[in-house]
Every structure is written in structure tokens, then in C-alpha cells.
Length: 140
Image (cartoon, rainbow, N blue to C red; front, side):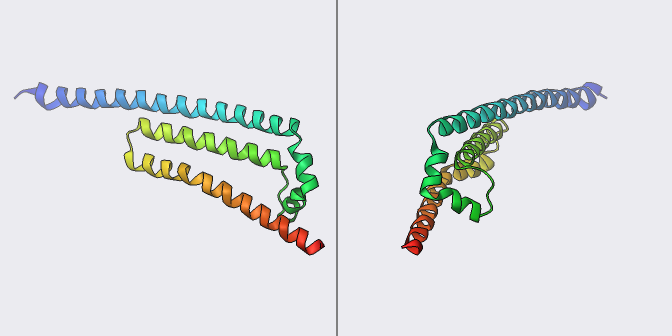
């Protein structure tokens, strides 16, 4: 009986696959941690830039802050846009991690979600503009 074919070769295959998955797991972990750091940095930069650009002051004058308060949103407009940038970067990091695992269906689904985000942002702006116009019309 050839013990090499029965025990050693399958054990080597299992060990090789375990090493490959360990490398992939480490790569995924690095991608996700790096993505999180980048997302936090981008969020901070976006919020600071929008505050320096006085977006919050402009949103106060335009009545957007009142709309946010009516919707029980406790963040400023610049913080909301920063949070949107944060989650976009996180989602991109997750897509990169899924691509490392070679999960084509999951990667395609996440890519479709990312492609859908501009439509959601446009819908939010249309909704905000509609609420602003409704408030303006009610005051007139």
C-alpha cells in the first residue's frame, strides 16, 4: 500500500490551499483596514473643505438646515456629505476585498450598487429641491 498517495499528497494539497487562503485573508484584512483609514481621512477632508467653503452657512440661508431638523437629522449638510463619501470609499474597499476572493457574482452585485449611487444622490437633491420649493411656496 502506498501511504504517500493516500495520506501525504492530500495533506500537501490541503496545506497548500490553507496557505493560499491565509495569504488571501491577510490581503483582504489589509485592504479593508487601508480602506477604512482612507475613508476616515477622506471624510474628514470633505467635511473640513465644506465647512471652510461655508456650505453650512449657505444651507442655513437656503432653509436646508430646517428641512434636516424636520427630518430629525442631527448632522449638518457638510457632515452628511462627508458620511456619504466615507461609505462610498468603504463600499469600494469591500468590492476590492471581494475581488481578491474571486467571487465574481458578489463583485458584480457590489459594482451595480456603486453604479446606482449617483442616481440616489440625484434623487436626494431633487427631493431637497422639492422640499425647499414647497417651503418657499407655503411662505408665499
